[in-house]
Length: 132
Image (cartoon, rainbow, N blue to C red):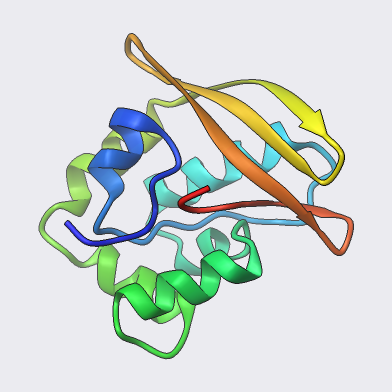
C-alpha cells in the first residue's frame, strides 16, 4: 500500500494506501482527530482534507498522482481496500491530547491497539500531520 498516511498503528496501517479526510477549524486537537476519522468512515473527501495540514494535503495528492487532496481522497475511497478501513475508522475512540506549543498528539484507540495521532497548528487551527 502506498500512502504517507501513517498516523496511527493498526487503524492507519489499514488506511495506508488510502486518503482519508475530516473537517478542520476546531479549537481542540481531539475534535480534529475525531473529525478526521468520521470523515474517513463517511468517505467525505472534502471533510477529510480539511483536517490535514498543508504539507499532508500536498502529500495526499502526490501519493495518488492527482492535482488535489480531494481528488486523491476520492480515488482512495474508491479503492477495494477502503471498505474495511472505513469501518475501522468508524470504531476509533479518540482520547486525550498532549499539546506542546504548535504540535500535539492525540490518543486514538481501535480495539486493543492504542496509537498517537500527530497534529500541527496552522493559522490557529489544529491539523492532522500525516506521516508525522
